[in-house]
Length: 441
Figure 1: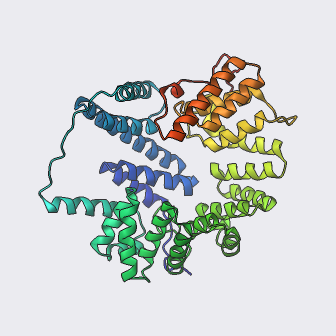
Figure 2: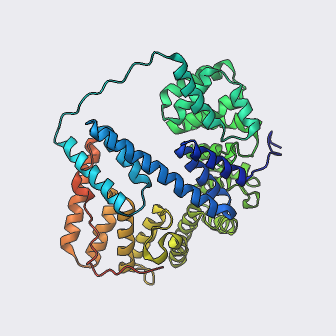
Figure 3: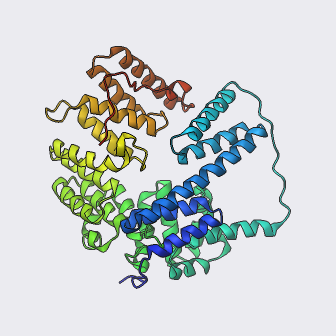
């Protein structure tokens, strides 16, 4: 039994914490709290989606405000970053269109080489202010943990606080250096091992991450560490171990703990991925089908079930599975109610573009490609352009297929050179006049 097995999950507490975070203008943290409840507690989905919507609205509003301030100060690169943040959270509508237009104009000015005013940062001469900022950030992170776990975090020194903040801000090199020093001094501390394991996993040091996470797992057990049930030590261990090419170990050790009946979707998901990595496709199909009985709204589960069905040469069943899965995000044909699970849209498009009788449906493939293009802000990937090429070739529109091939080549050249994506690629390639009619699911 784990150290915190008796500390049960409470989605109401998580939602209350999310509301408190939003009231304090900790918008990203509130969004994470809402999505954690959505992921783990379908019974609280309505309240969680409302919090998610308000948090995204607050993030977008703040980002637009900061973008305007930066633009007025001629700080164009910073304004671009704020506009990109706003676009991640703005729903379709006039505000999003205006933000997209402003972004394009600023990007064009930067590409033309317009000089940017250099604004010097004021020097900070108050050491206490820095400490306060660090402690506030640290406490925001720790407040999301279960009280017994949070107590262990608060017992650690200032160096750990800075390392944890660095990790959550993506400063992996600085965080790694601090964690290495701390673990050398306290090799048996499960918190230090867990956070260094997370850091190593993000940095791509897979085998080392699995080692740290295994030690943390022995102390913490199977229970999630946070209030909303999204931070799972064995799930992270499973991710690292599967990535290290040892999915068999994951299957062996998590067979019981990953049972969907235990209400730990992240752990169940990682176990299912280990089955898929071992190419045990029938077991993968059975597991994700059973898991969806418990977690019916988990889009990644639906996607993995469809993948297993494809490998089992059951493409019509995979199509039915995916169409059912994407339906909630496409009510009324608008596909704006819920976030799209883009991998599902892409896999479904590939199936409809296949030559298999009873599966091929070019009209539906075109519809789905247009939805993907819209969801990505018309920044399609190289593989998306490949799908567009196949689609236009299949319907006999060689002119548009050639345009898609040209864009595919431009994108490939830009990526190979490490250059910025050309503005050309933001123009739509999926034309509504290609014999496609949008239909409601």
